[in-house]
Length: 68
Image (tube, rainbow, N blue to C red):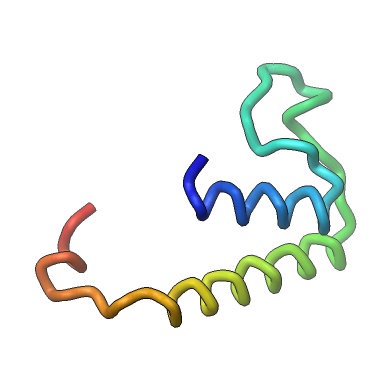
């Protein structure tokens, strides 16, 4: 699991009560009802994690920015 996947999974577990972000091919396991304030908390946590991760990484070069 990549660092980003790990961070997103931890956020989903903590803020949304979702055990995994893996597709399990079952509606009861893959679809979740959640309150908007829980979703907002999860989005804020993801944003903050992105800011922290971005601040710790070296700046990308122009050639790296163009890559997908």
